Length: 515
Image: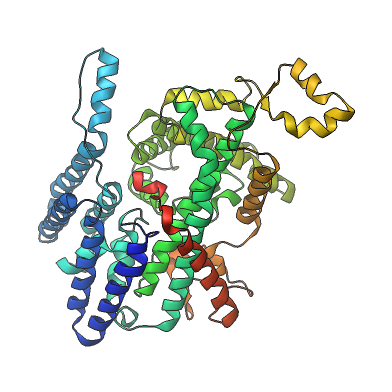
Protein backbone atom coordinates (compact mmCIF):
# COMPACT_ATOMS: atom_id res chain seq x y z
CA UNK A 1 0.00 0.00 0.00
CA UNK A 2 1.39 3.38 -1.00
CA UNK A 3 1.04 6.64 0.91
CA UNK A 4 0.27 8.26 -2.45
CA UNK A 5 -2.74 6.11 -3.29
CA UNK A 6 -6.49 6.55 -3.03
CA UNK A 7 -6.94 3.41 -0.95
CA UNK A 8 -4.46 4.62 1.66
CA UNK A 9 -5.57 8.26 1.90
CA UNK A 10 -9.32 7.80 1.67
CA UNK A 11 -9.84 4.34 3.20
CA UNK A 12 -7.01 2.88 5.24
CA UNK A 13 -5.86 6.04 7.02
CA UNK A 14 -9.33 7.26 8.13
CA UNK A 15 -10.31 3.81 9.42
CA UNK A 16 -7.08 3.28 11.36
CA UNK A 17 -7.00 6.84 12.71
CA UNK A 18 -10.64 6.98 13.83
CA UNK A 19 -10.47 3.49 15.31
CA UNK A 20 -7.29 4.35 17.21
CA UNK A 21 -8.70 7.58 18.58
CA UNK A 22 -11.90 5.88 19.75
CA UNK A 23 -9.98 3.08 21.43
CA UNK A 24 -7.42 5.44 22.97
CA UNK A 25 -10.29 7.34 24.58
CA UNK A 26 -12.45 4.45 25.76
CA UNK A 27 -10.13 1.44 26.08
CA UNK A 28 -6.85 0.55 27.83
CA UNK A 29 -3.54 1.59 26.25
CA UNK A 30 -2.62 -1.90 25.03
CA UNK A 31 -5.93 -2.29 23.18
CA UNK A 32 -5.27 0.90 21.22
CA UNK A 33 -1.70 -0.24 20.54
CA UNK A 34 -2.97 -3.63 19.35
CA UNK A 35 -5.25 -1.81 16.89
CA UNK A 36 -2.27 0.07 15.48
CA UNK A 37 -0.20 -3.13 15.27
CA UNK A 38 -2.95 -4.97 13.37
CA UNK A 39 -3.47 -1.97 11.10
CA UNK A 40 0.26 -1.79 10.40
CA UNK A 41 0.39 -5.49 9.54
CA UNK A 42 -2.53 -5.02 7.15
CA UNK A 43 -0.63 -2.10 5.61
CA UNK A 44 2.45 -4.30 5.15
CA UNK A 45 0.55 -7.37 3.96
CA UNK A 46 -1.42 -5.38 1.37
CA UNK A 47 1.58 -5.66 -0.97
CA UNK A 48 2.11 -9.39 -0.51
CA UNK A 49 0.28 -11.23 2.31
CA UNK A 50 2.64 -14.19 1.90
CA UNK A 51 5.48 -12.18 3.45
CA UNK A 52 3.60 -11.39 6.65
CA UNK A 53 5.18 -14.52 8.08
CA UNK A 54 8.61 -13.00 7.48
CA UNK A 55 8.10 -9.82 9.47
CA UNK A 56 6.14 -11.59 12.23
CA UNK A 57 8.81 -14.30 12.42
CA UNK A 58 11.54 -11.66 12.53
CA UNK A 59 9.76 -9.92 15.40
CA UNK A 60 9.36 -13.20 17.28
CA UNK A 61 13.01 -14.15 16.77
CA UNK A 62 14.41 -10.80 17.89
CA UNK A 63 12.05 -10.38 20.81
CA UNK A 64 12.86 -13.91 21.99
CA UNK A 65 16.61 -13.28 21.75
CA UNK A 66 16.11 -9.99 23.57
CA UNK A 67 14.15 -11.60 26.39
CA UNK A 68 16.78 -14.30 26.76
CA UNK A 69 19.53 -11.67 26.87
CA UNK A 70 17.60 -9.65 29.44
CA UNK A 71 17.55 -12.56 31.87
CA UNK A 72 21.29 -13.07 31.72
CA UNK A 73 24.16 -11.11 33.20
CA UNK A 74 25.84 -8.75 30.76
CA UNK A 75 29.01 -10.86 30.72
CA UNK A 76 26.98 -13.77 29.27
CA UNK A 77 24.94 -11.82 26.72
CA UNK A 78 27.50 -11.54 23.94
CA UNK A 79 26.94 -15.01 22.40
CA UNK A 80 23.21 -14.27 22.21
CA UNK A 81 23.88 -10.88 20.64
CA UNK A 82 26.06 -12.55 18.02
CA UNK A 83 23.32 -15.12 17.31
CA UNK A 84 20.77 -12.33 16.96
CA UNK A 85 22.86 -10.15 14.66
CA UNK A 86 23.99 -13.10 12.51
CA UNK A 87 20.41 -14.35 12.30
CA UNK A 88 19.13 -10.98 11.12
CA UNK A 89 21.91 -10.50 8.59
CA UNK A 90 21.48 -14.06 7.30
CA UNK A 91 17.82 -13.48 6.49
CA UNK A 92 18.62 -10.14 4.90
CA UNK A 93 21.49 -11.72 2.97
CA UNK A 94 19.32 -14.52 1.60
CA UNK A 95 16.47 -12.37 0.35
CA UNK A 96 18.51 -9.41 -0.83
CA UNK A 97 21.94 -10.73 -1.82
CA UNK A 98 21.63 -14.45 -2.64
CA UNK A 99 21.05 -13.90 -6.37
CA UNK A 100 23.73 -11.22 -6.47
CA UNK A 101 26.25 -13.56 -4.79
CA UNK A 102 25.61 -16.48 -7.15
CA UNK A 103 25.69 -14.24 -10.20
CA UNK A 104 29.02 -12.75 -9.09
CA UNK A 105 30.52 -16.19 -8.45
CA UNK A 106 29.29 -17.42 -11.83
CA UNK A 107 30.86 -14.48 -13.65
CA UNK A 108 34.19 -14.83 -11.86
CA UNK A 109 34.39 -18.59 -12.27
CA UNK A 110 32.82 -18.84 -15.71
CA UNK A 111 30.37 -21.35 -14.28
CA UNK A 112 26.67 -21.72 -14.89
CA UNK A 113 25.12 -20.99 -11.51
CA UNK A 114 21.50 -19.92 -11.80
CA UNK A 115 19.70 -18.65 -8.72
CA UNK A 116 15.97 -18.98 -8.29
CA UNK A 117 14.31 -15.58 -8.60
CA UNK A 118 13.57 -14.24 -5.12
CA UNK A 119 11.06 -11.43 -4.67
CA UNK A 120 12.59 -8.88 -2.30
CA UNK A 121 10.27 -8.34 0.69
CA UNK A 122 9.33 -4.73 1.32
CA UNK A 123 11.18 -2.95 4.12
CA UNK A 124 13.43 -5.89 4.99
CA UNK A 125 16.53 -3.67 5.13
CA UNK A 126 14.76 -1.18 7.40
CA UNK A 127 13.15 -3.52 9.93
CA UNK A 128 16.30 -5.65 10.04
CA UNK A 129 18.56 -2.72 10.93
CA UNK A 130 15.98 -1.42 13.37
CA UNK A 131 15.90 -4.68 15.29
CA UNK A 132 19.68 -4.97 15.30
CA UNK A 133 19.80 -1.60 17.07
CA UNK A 134 17.36 -2.97 19.63
CA UNK A 135 19.53 -6.02 20.38
CA UNK A 136 22.72 -3.96 20.64
CA UNK A 137 21.04 -1.42 22.93
CA UNK A 138 19.61 -4.21 25.07
CA UNK A 139 23.09 -5.73 25.34
CA UNK A 140 24.28 -2.32 26.60
CA UNK A 141 21.45 -2.06 29.17
CA UNK A 142 19.69 0.75 27.31
CA UNK A 143 16.30 -0.99 27.04
CA UNK A 144 13.67 -0.56 29.74
CA UNK A 145 10.39 -1.49 28.04
CA UNK A 146 10.11 -5.25 27.34
CA UNK A 147 6.38 -5.41 26.50
CA UNK A 148 5.87 -7.58 23.39
CA UNK A 149 3.00 -5.42 22.10
CA UNK A 150 5.05 -2.25 22.49
CA UNK A 151 7.96 -3.92 20.74
CA UNK A 152 5.75 -4.94 17.82
CA UNK A 153 4.54 -1.34 17.42
CA UNK A 154 8.15 -0.13 17.48
CA UNK A 155 8.94 -2.43 14.54
CA UNK A 156 5.78 -2.28 12.40
CA UNK A 157 4.40 1.25 13.01
CA UNK A 158 3.23 1.88 9.46
CA UNK A 159 4.38 5.50 8.91
CA UNK A 160 8.04 4.47 9.18
CA UNK A 161 7.83 0.76 8.35
CA UNK A 162 8.55 0.69 4.62
CA UNK A 163 11.34 3.23 4.05
CA UNK A 164 12.27 4.64 7.42
CA UNK A 165 13.35 6.63 9.20
CA UNK A 166 15.32 3.92 11.01
CA UNK A 167 14.27 4.56 14.60
CA UNK A 168 15.68 3.57 17.96
CA UNK A 169 13.37 2.04 20.53
CA UNK A 170 14.12 5.02 22.79
CA UNK A 171 12.53 7.28 20.17
CA UNK A 172 9.24 5.36 20.06
CA UNK A 173 8.57 3.35 23.22
CA UNK A 174 8.72 6.23 25.74
CA UNK A 175 6.30 8.27 23.60
CA UNK A 176 3.53 5.68 23.69
CA UNK A 177 3.36 6.09 27.47
CA UNK A 178 2.79 9.83 27.26
CA UNK A 179 -0.61 11.48 27.36
CA UNK A 180 -0.22 12.92 23.87
CA UNK A 181 -0.27 9.44 22.41
CA UNK A 182 -3.60 8.53 24.02
CA UNK A 183 -5.24 11.94 23.69
CA UNK A 184 -6.07 13.82 20.51
CA UNK A 185 -4.21 17.12 20.29
CA UNK A 186 -5.61 19.21 17.49
CA UNK A 187 -2.33 21.06 17.08
CA UNK A 188 -0.50 17.78 16.41
CA UNK A 189 -3.23 16.68 13.99
CA UNK A 190 -3.15 19.97 12.05
CA UNK A 191 0.63 20.01 11.92
CA UNK A 192 0.78 16.36 10.87
CA UNK A 193 -1.73 16.93 8.07
CA UNK A 194 0.28 19.95 6.89
CA UNK A 195 3.55 18.00 6.78
CA UNK A 196 1.83 15.06 5.05
CA UNK A 197 0.29 17.36 2.43
CA UNK A 198 3.64 19.01 1.68
CA UNK A 199 5.24 15.58 1.28
CA UNK A 200 2.41 14.35 -0.96
CA UNK A 201 2.85 17.32 -3.28
CA UNK A 202 6.63 16.81 -3.38
CA UNK A 203 6.12 13.22 -4.47
CA UNK A 204 3.30 13.40 -7.03
CA UNK A 205 3.55 17.06 -8.01
CA UNK A 206 7.32 17.27 -8.47
CA UNK A 207 9.22 13.95 -8.25
CA UNK A 208 6.86 11.95 -10.47
CA UNK A 209 6.71 14.76 -13.02
CA UNK A 210 10.49 15.21 -13.20
CA UNK A 211 10.85 11.44 -13.67
CA UNK A 212 9.45 11.93 -17.17
CA UNK A 213 12.69 13.66 -18.14
CA UNK A 214 15.10 11.12 -16.63
CA UNK A 215 13.51 7.68 -17.05
CA UNK A 216 13.28 7.61 -20.89
CA UNK A 217 16.94 8.54 -21.33
CA UNK A 218 18.22 6.09 -18.72
CA UNK A 219 16.04 3.39 -20.28
CA UNK A 220 17.39 4.23 -23.72
CA UNK A 221 20.96 4.02 -22.43
CA UNK A 222 20.15 0.63 -20.88
CA UNK A 223 18.88 -0.60 -24.26
CA UNK A 224 22.08 0.44 -26.03
CA UNK A 225 21.36 3.97 -27.25
CA UNK A 226 24.27 6.21 -26.29
CA UNK A 227 22.99 9.57 -24.99
CA UNK A 228 24.71 12.68 -26.29
CA UNK A 229 25.92 15.53 -24.10
CA UNK A 230 22.67 17.40 -23.53
CA UNK A 231 20.46 14.32 -23.10
CA UNK A 232 22.88 12.76 -20.60
CA UNK A 233 23.10 15.89 -18.47
CA UNK A 234 19.36 16.49 -18.62
CA UNK A 235 18.65 12.96 -17.40
CA UNK A 236 21.27 13.18 -14.65
CA UNK A 237 19.98 16.51 -13.37
CA UNK A 238 16.35 15.37 -13.61
CA UNK A 239 17.10 12.23 -11.58
CA UNK A 240 18.97 14.35 -9.03
CA UNK A 241 15.78 16.34 -8.42
CA UNK A 242 13.55 13.28 -8.71
CA UNK A 243 15.23 11.32 -5.93
CA UNK A 244 15.49 14.46 -3.79
CA UNK A 245 11.77 15.26 -3.88
CA UNK A 246 10.79 11.59 -3.83
CA UNK A 247 12.73 10.79 -0.66
CA UNK A 248 12.06 14.17 0.92
CA UNK A 249 8.36 13.72 0.15
CA UNK A 250 8.30 10.25 1.71
CA UNK A 251 10.13 11.48 4.81
CA UNK A 252 7.64 14.34 5.22
CA UNK A 253 4.67 12.03 4.78
CA UNK A 254 6.04 9.55 7.33
CA UNK A 255 6.70 12.27 9.92
CA UNK A 256 3.32 13.88 9.27
CA UNK A 257 1.43 10.59 9.60
CA UNK A 258 3.21 9.69 12.83
CA UNK A 259 2.49 13.14 14.28
CA UNK A 260 -1.22 12.64 13.59
CA UNK A 261 -1.01 9.64 15.93
CA UNK A 262 0.93 11.59 18.57
CA UNK A 263 4.37 10.18 17.70
CA UNK A 264 7.38 12.33 16.72
CA UNK A 265 9.78 10.52 14.39
CA UNK A 266 13.41 11.59 14.02
CA UNK A 267 14.26 13.78 11.08
CA UNK A 268 15.65 11.91 8.09
CA UNK A 269 16.21 14.64 5.52
CA UNK A 270 17.60 18.14 6.06
CA UNK A 271 18.12 19.99 2.75
CA UNK A 272 21.14 17.89 1.65
CA UNK A 273 21.65 19.89 -1.56
CA UNK A 274 22.40 22.93 0.60
CA UNK A 275 25.49 21.11 1.87
CA UNK A 276 28.77 22.91 1.18
CA UNK A 277 30.79 19.69 1.50
CA UNK A 278 30.21 15.99 1.01
CA UNK A 279 30.68 15.42 4.75
CA UNK A 280 27.85 17.86 5.38
CA UNK A 281 25.80 16.14 2.67
CA UNK A 282 25.87 12.86 4.59
CA UNK A 283 24.81 14.65 7.76
CA UNK A 284 21.70 15.75 5.90
CA UNK A 285 20.82 12.84 3.56
CA UNK A 286 19.11 9.76 5.03
CA UNK A 287 20.18 10.93 8.46
CA UNK A 288 18.99 7.88 10.38
CA UNK A 289 20.89 5.50 8.09
CA UNK A 290 24.01 7.65 8.49
CA UNK A 291 23.47 7.51 12.25
CA UNK A 292 23.15 3.72 12.19
CA UNK A 293 26.30 3.27 10.10
CA UNK A 294 28.18 5.71 12.34
CA UNK A 295 27.10 4.24 15.68
CA UNK A 296 27.11 0.55 14.82
CA UNK A 297 29.89 0.28 12.25
CA UNK A 298 32.10 3.38 11.99
CA UNK A 299 32.64 3.87 15.73
CA UNK A 300 33.25 0.15 16.47
CA UNK A 301 35.89 0.18 13.70
CA UNK A 302 37.66 3.01 15.51
CA UNK A 303 36.03 5.97 13.79
CA UNK A 304 38.36 8.91 13.45
CA UNK A 305 40.27 8.20 16.66
CA UNK A 306 43.00 6.40 14.74
CA UNK A 307 45.70 7.34 12.25
CA UNK A 308 44.85 8.76 8.86
CA UNK A 309 45.23 5.51 6.96
CA UNK A 310 43.01 3.58 9.33
CA UNK A 311 40.54 6.45 9.48
CA UNK A 312 40.23 6.62 5.71
CA UNK A 313 39.98 2.84 5.50
CA UNK A 314 37.11 2.96 8.03
CA UNK A 315 35.34 5.54 5.90
CA UNK A 316 35.68 3.41 2.77
CA UNK A 317 34.43 0.28 4.54
CA UNK A 318 31.38 2.10 5.88
CA UNK A 319 30.50 3.73 2.57
CA UNK A 320 31.02 0.55 0.53
CA UNK A 321 28.69 -1.34 2.88
CA UNK A 322 26.29 1.60 2.86
CA UNK A 323 26.21 1.40 -0.92
CA UNK A 324 25.62 -2.35 -0.80
CA UNK A 325 22.77 -1.78 1.69
CA UNK A 326 20.98 0.25 -0.97
CA UNK A 327 20.95 -2.56 -3.49
CA UNK A 328 22.41 -5.89 -4.56
CA UNK A 329 24.52 -4.68 -7.45
CA UNK A 330 28.03 -3.53 -8.17
CA UNK A 331 26.78 -0.13 -9.27
CA UNK A 332 25.51 0.45 -5.73
CA UNK A 333 28.86 -0.63 -4.33
CA UNK A 334 30.58 1.72 -6.76
CA UNK A 335 28.25 4.54 -5.72
CA UNK A 336 29.13 3.96 -2.07
CA UNK A 337 32.85 3.74 -2.93
CA UNK A 338 32.65 6.97 -4.93
CA UNK A 339 31.11 8.77 -1.96
CA UNK A 340 33.77 7.21 0.24
CA UNK A 341 36.46 8.73 -1.96
CA UNK A 342 34.64 12.06 -1.85
CA UNK A 343 34.60 11.99 1.96
CA UNK A 344 38.27 10.99 2.19
CA UNK A 345 39.17 13.87 -0.13
CA UNK A 346 37.01 16.20 1.95
CA UNK A 347 38.86 15.19 5.14
CA UNK A 348 42.17 15.66 3.36
CA UNK A 349 41.17 19.16 2.26
CA UNK A 350 40.16 20.06 5.81
CA UNK A 351 43.59 19.05 7.02
CA UNK A 352 45.19 21.27 4.39
CA UNK A 353 42.79 24.15 4.99
CA UNK A 354 41.45 23.90 8.55
CA UNK A 355 40.10 27.48 8.79
CA UNK A 356 36.43 28.38 8.43
CA UNK A 357 35.45 28.98 4.78
CA UNK A 358 34.27 32.40 3.65
CA UNK A 359 30.91 33.02 2.01
CA UNK A 360 32.32 32.70 -1.51
CA UNK A 361 34.00 29.41 -0.61
CA UNK A 362 30.74 28.16 0.90
CA UNK A 363 28.82 28.73 -2.32
CA UNK A 364 31.65 27.31 -4.40
CA UNK A 365 31.66 24.27 -2.12
CA UNK A 366 27.89 23.93 -2.53
CA UNK A 367 28.23 23.92 -6.33
CA UNK A 368 31.10 21.42 -6.29
CA UNK A 369 29.27 19.16 -3.83
CA UNK A 370 26.12 19.14 -5.94
CA UNK A 371 28.14 18.38 -9.08
CA UNK A 372 29.85 15.46 -7.34
CA UNK A 373 26.49 14.18 -6.10
CA UNK A 374 24.97 14.39 -9.61
CA UNK A 375 27.80 12.29 -11.06
CA UNK A 376 27.38 9.71 -8.30
CA UNK A 377 23.59 9.57 -8.82
CA UNK A 378 24.19 8.46 -12.41
CA UNK A 379 26.03 5.37 -11.15
CA UNK A 380 23.33 4.83 -8.50
CA UNK A 381 20.48 5.06 -11.03
CA UNK A 382 22.07 3.02 -13.82
CA UNK A 383 20.84 -0.55 -14.25
CA UNK A 384 24.36 -1.83 -14.84
CA UNK A 385 27.92 -0.94 -15.76
CA UNK A 386 27.10 -0.50 -19.44
CA UNK A 387 24.36 2.02 -18.68
CA UNK A 388 26.52 3.92 -16.20
CA UNK A 389 29.44 4.03 -18.64
CA UNK A 390 27.21 5.18 -21.48
CA UNK A 391 25.65 7.96 -19.38
CA UNK A 392 28.96 9.21 -17.99
CA UNK A 393 30.54 9.10 -21.45
CA UNK A 394 27.70 11.23 -22.72
CA UNK A 395 28.15 13.72 -19.90
CA UNK A 396 31.78 14.34 -20.88
CA UNK A 397 30.94 14.60 -24.58
CA UNK A 398 32.36 11.26 -25.75
CA UNK A 399 29.01 10.37 -27.34
CA UNK A 400 28.94 13.60 -29.31
CA UNK A 401 26.64 16.59 -29.13
CA UNK A 402 23.11 16.74 -30.50
CA UNK A 403 21.16 19.99 -30.80
CA UNK A 404 17.71 20.86 -32.02
CA UNK A 405 18.25 22.89 -35.19
CA UNK A 406 15.02 24.87 -34.71
CA UNK A 407 16.55 26.53 -31.65
CA UNK A 408 19.13 28.12 -33.96
CA UNK A 409 16.82 28.96 -36.87
CA UNK A 410 16.27 32.66 -35.94
CA UNK A 411 20.00 33.27 -35.43
CA UNK A 412 20.92 31.16 -38.41
CA UNK A 413 18.98 33.57 -40.63
CA UNK A 414 21.48 36.25 -39.66
CA UNK A 415 24.61 34.20 -39.08
CA UNK A 416 25.17 30.58 -40.12
CA UNK A 417 25.68 29.45 -36.52
CA UNK A 418 24.00 26.10 -37.11
CA UNK A 419 26.16 25.47 -40.15
CA UNK A 420 29.31 26.34 -38.22
CA UNK A 421 28.33 23.94 -35.42
CA UNK A 422 27.51 21.19 -37.90
CA UNK A 423 30.92 21.66 -39.51
CA UNK A 424 32.44 21.18 -36.05
CA UNK A 425 30.80 17.79 -35.63
CA UNK A 426 27.58 18.78 -33.85
CA UNK A 427 24.56 16.71 -34.87
CA UNK A 428 21.13 18.27 -35.34
CA UNK A 429 18.11 16.20 -34.50
CA UNK A 430 15.00 16.09 -32.33
CA UNK A 431 16.04 15.44 -28.73
CA UNK A 432 13.47 13.22 -26.98
CA UNK A 433 11.64 14.75 -23.98
CA UNK A 434 13.72 17.91 -24.25
CA UNK A 435 12.40 21.12 -25.73
CA UNK A 436 15.06 23.42 -24.33
CA UNK A 437 13.89 26.43 -22.40
CA UNK A 438 11.03 24.67 -20.60
CA UNK A 439 13.27 22.12 -18.89
CA UNK A 440 16.04 24.62 -18.17
CA UNK A 441 13.51 26.91 -16.46
CA UNK A 442 12.08 23.98 -14.49
CA UNK A 443 15.52 22.90 -13.28
CA UNK A 444 16.34 26.51 -12.31
CA UNK A 445 13.12 26.76 -10.27
CA UNK A 446 13.78 23.44 -8.53
CA UNK A 447 17.35 24.47 -7.74
CA UNK A 448 16.02 27.70 -6.26
CA UNK A 449 13.61 25.71 -4.09
CA UNK A 450 16.25 23.35 -2.70
CA UNK A 451 18.87 26.06 -2.21
CA UNK A 452 16.97 29.07 -0.99
CA UNK A 453 13.57 28.09 0.44
CA UNK A 454 13.08 26.68 3.96
CA UNK A 455 12.64 22.93 4.21
CA UNK A 456 9.58 21.32 5.75
CA UNK A 457 10.87 21.11 9.30
CA UNK A 458 11.87 24.77 9.13
CA UNK A 459 8.53 25.74 7.66
CA UNK A 460 6.45 23.61 10.03
CA UNK A 461 8.41 23.82 13.25
CA UNK A 462 8.39 20.30 14.65
CA UNK A 463 8.22 21.11 18.34
CA UNK A 464 5.78 20.74 21.20
CA UNK A 465 5.51 23.79 23.34
CA UNK A 466 8.86 24.58 24.89
CA UNK A 467 10.23 21.07 24.65
CA UNK A 468 11.90 20.26 21.34
CA UNK A 469 12.30 16.63 20.45
CA UNK A 470 15.95 15.66 20.73
CA UNK A 471 16.06 14.39 17.15
CA UNK A 472 14.69 17.65 15.78
CA UNK A 473 16.41 20.11 18.07
CA UNK A 474 19.74 20.17 16.23
CA UNK A 475 18.15 20.56 12.81
CA UNK A 476 15.03 22.68 13.26
CA UNK A 477 15.12 26.44 13.23
CA UNK A 478 12.10 28.60 14.07
CA UNK A 479 11.24 31.17 11.43
CA UNK A 480 8.73 33.93 11.99
CA UNK A 481 6.82 33.42 8.75
CA UNK A 482 6.52 29.65 9.17
CA UNK A 483 3.39 27.54 9.26
CA UNK A 484 0.78 28.17 11.92
CA UNK A 485 -2.85 27.03 12.31
CA UNK A 486 -4.41 29.96 10.44
CA UNK A 487 -6.90 30.43 7.62
CA UNK A 488 -4.18 31.50 5.17
CA UNK A 489 -2.04 28.47 5.84
CA UNK A 490 -5.15 26.31 5.77
CA UNK A 491 -5.76 27.41 2.19
CA UNK A 492 -2.13 26.72 1.26
CA UNK A 493 -2.09 23.25 2.81
CA UNK A 494 -5.49 22.36 1.36
CA UNK A 495 -4.30 23.47 -2.08
CA UNK A 496 -1.18 21.30 -1.83
CA UNK A 497 -3.24 18.32 -0.70
CA UNK A 498 -5.84 18.73 -3.45
CA UNK A 499 -3.13 19.19 -6.09
CA UNK A 500 -1.45 16.01 -4.86
CA UNK A 501 -4.70 14.06 -4.61
CA UNK A 502 -5.68 15.16 -8.13
CA UNK A 503 -2.47 13.62 -9.48
CA UNK A 504 -2.93 10.24 -7.79
CA UNK A 505 -4.23 8.48 -10.89
CA UNK A 506 -0.81 7.25 -11.99
CA UNK A 507 0.61 6.34 -8.59
CA UNK A 508 4.23 5.21 -8.45
CA UNK A 509 6.32 3.62 -5.75
CA UNK A 510 8.76 5.66 -3.74
CA UNK A 511 12.32 5.09 -4.93
CA UNK A 512 13.48 3.91 -1.50
CA UNK A 513 10.92 1.09 -1.57
CA UNK A 514 13.52 -0.74 -3.70
CA UNK A 515 16.06 -0.79 -0.90
